[in-house]
Image (tube, rainbow, N blue to C red; front, side, top):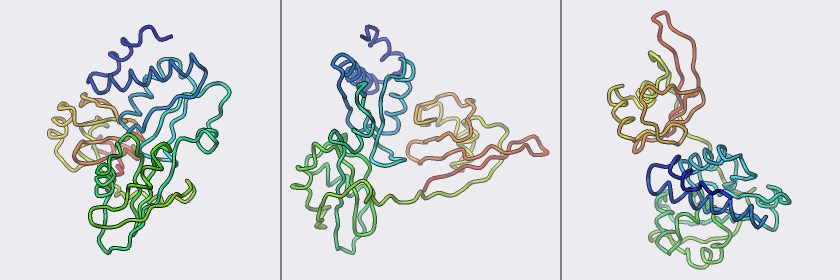
Length: 267
């Protein structure tokens, strides 16, 4: 159905990894439409999702669903839906794709997201089968593809030297931490990408411009190499190695002709 599939892939992805991702997604779509069945990807990160969303929007926006277990999930699965299937069947019906696990421990040692992820990989679980890892106090909720649930419950017994006890939970039981952030108020000559990056990450505009041109900055989770690109209110900016910010508010102009902004910096 998509005879120009390779043209689409080359148009939207520069790197080989991105092209391979889009090719797999378009294969899923083609099979879904030909057989009129649901077809799903593995977990996508925010950058991958943004890339895929852009392609989907430009090929007619076929019926689909992104779902990561809860609203605001960083990692999500994409499902192409046949005309007879509702999103609810994928989220909570017999065809649901995701499972939820709680790993509890009693050690006083503080375990991090990296600790849990490393231990999951250490028992042979692939990253693309694991969604968000929600670390709490003495427990961690892990979202996974339902297909790996039996293996995880059987083999995931420790994080480093800390023993963990795993059990199934429901989506409603997930302990989702509140966002941690600080608000940064500043003024900029204009809401150019390099200016907002400079304000949000407390670096010089020259350094911010260097990062943009070097491909280290993602605007809306997609790479943007144009330092003068105007940033819309509400857009998310990621600087690789330094974190993520959101242009929360574009305010009034000062008497000196500068624009006041409020940036949410995630911590």
